[in-house]
Image 1: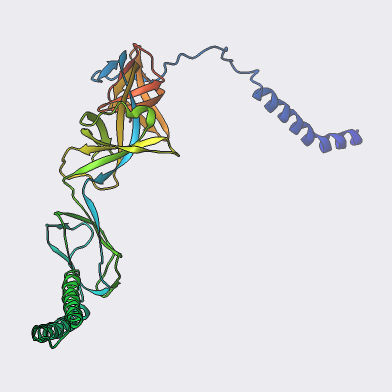
Image 2 (image 1 turned 45 degrees about the vertical axis):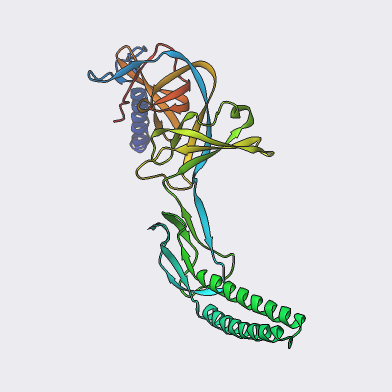
Length: 347
């Protein structure tokens, strides 16, 4: 009996632990709880349509196809002002971005060397003139030969030409604006040595800006000089009308394009040179779905619209094409007759 009692005292703790583990395991299996039968939960996609939301039912329209080409803005009248003589820059009166008037002094070069050359040329001219006049008097009395007269006359003419050249070179030390415009870049500072042909300033006329566009050869015939065309610049980001001004005859052998120059309408402020621009060229008509630009929004790299169905608003991926003023072409993602929000819900 003592042995049995001792065995019970030694083994009751493990026995209780085992029974407790079994109870917890059975409990976790859900045998003592009420189970929920399987089924479906009702869910409506999207979000409710706001009562004041503006909607639009899209329709497929038959319109001329517009092919988008891109180019850059430049000025119809732009020049690069370069040095004509070798001299140090003494004064710089214009910087990049400055507006200048016609004949305004932009750069003054150090003219001391050229003035010294002019003084020497004038002295040589006076000496040659005196010698020529003396030879003329001697020739009149047959004290000088015809050859001496011709030689002194040639020396006199060469000396006078040297004075003219020195005077002209002296005018090159003042660089003035050939027309009213704006400076885009300056490449000279006070004290810099300039050399003939070295660019100093770039000047353009903002009143006559144009868009230069390389157009595929197959589309060039659709552009007639003098015709109005639709275009849009990166800044200002508003559609505008231009006029076909010139079609360059040469074809780029690498891109198979011809350069088309389109004059822009004057704007305030005028577009800056180098501004990116788009030109739309009419082609064969086709069926297209157009939606307001405000209806399309981006989520990262994705383009989306919000479609209305059964008073619910659902997001839809789309692919857009040409932008036509306040409308944009939808190439994929929408069907004829679907309704979308004009102003998407973004909150």
